[in-house]
Amino acid sequence: MKIGVLGTGMVGQAIGGKLAEMGHDVIIGTRDVPNTMARTEPNPNGIPAFSVWQKQNPGVKLGTFADAAKHGEIVINATNGTGSIVALDLAGETNLNDKILVDIAIPLDFSKGMPPILSVCNTDSLGEQIQRAFPKVKVVKTLNTVTASLMVNPRQLADGEHHLFVCGNNAEAKAQIINLLANWFGWKHIIDLGDISNARGTEMYLPIWLRLWGTLGTGIFNVKIVK
Amino acid sequence: MKIGVLGTGMVGQAIGGKLAEMGHDVIIGTRDVPNTMARTEPNPNGIPAFSVWQKQNPGVKLGTFADAAKHGEIVINATNGTGSIVALDLAGETNLNDKILVDIAIPLDFSKGMPPILSVCNTDSLGEQIQRAFPKVKVVKTLNTVTASLMVNPRQLADGEHHLFVCGNNAEAKAQIINLLANWFGWKHIIDLGDISNARGTEMYLPIWLRLWGTLGTGIFNVKIVK
Image (tube, rainbow over the protein chains, first blue to last red):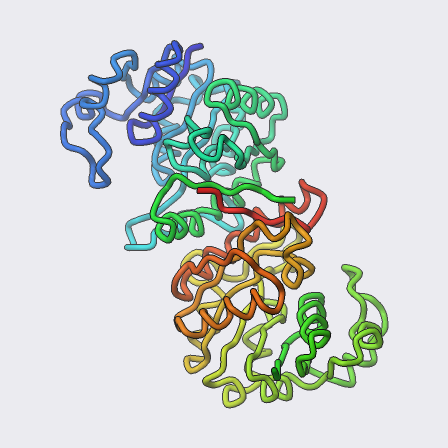
């Protein structure tokens, strides 16, 4: 399958690397290809520079946001949430229209210090902003409630006995993504919360998720819905 | 133990009723006692009027917010979140000072339609607002992530194998409440998230919690943290 991944950070690397490893044809998109390839230092969180990471993952191609969006039968938004709309504008509406956009981005604003705040919440969400800005794109919000390593390997934790959430306005697109998340990564339990306005819920879960990360001392955790 | 419960709604009834049943000396506080006793119709959500409920729970006394706060060695805020500060002002700072205030309130604003929005979030929380307004009160935020029936009987669900959160600035007060929640209601797993600013996290969990309630078709569910 041809997949376009927007964003060269931890989530883009995890998703793009895993899908390429499985034999999919992946282009990861960035704003400025020469600039991305010129960086060799890890980012402040210790995530390897893309150019370094790519040497271990030669199957993954790098292109512009537009290259990746044009390439993908499915496009995955793994950019920083505060920059997602700009990145998607650069990807180009005509390259995205009628496709499924898997939106993993989290609208965390670190500019005001710690803990980060959400750049949008309560009466709106990043998922909804993206759907409004790109009305012909089938936005499916998912994977944004777990750390990158769990996204692509949920069975490393309790044999996958924990939950992921999905929301979006297009039922067929959601069904396809639920299926792909099971086939690609092994997700066992995915709850469909409803339309894209439920992105408010999964994005507003971030503050407790971040705090639990600190309290538990690991990002390898998730919630299991017990009923 | 002498307990003051502020609020005559579903949460006040569940907590006050359970504690009285266990032999504690409970006064539930309301703004206007004659007015509360005059109502006999269930509220729009089907919660029985206090006067009707009290006939089945004759051990629970009704008083003003100030009566309840003065009475309690521990005071429990079970008012509507949007009215909590006003209720606590009526309860009276001198009646609350130096006591533990267990804050269960959720700052949901239904006035703009459905879904409700939070009246405070992201850069602040109701728990923090209360702590700032009553600096000598030991505010412990907890129980606000589950429905009333689960608060007082967590073992009805998966034998209690799910998680509750607690936060607050006073370590001794939190330790005492964690102990009481286990002894009173049978809570097995309580995670201390840290200081009162973590009320942001547990309050911002409400949108996904409300949506899960709709999706699952029951309020008798909770999260288990899997790590």
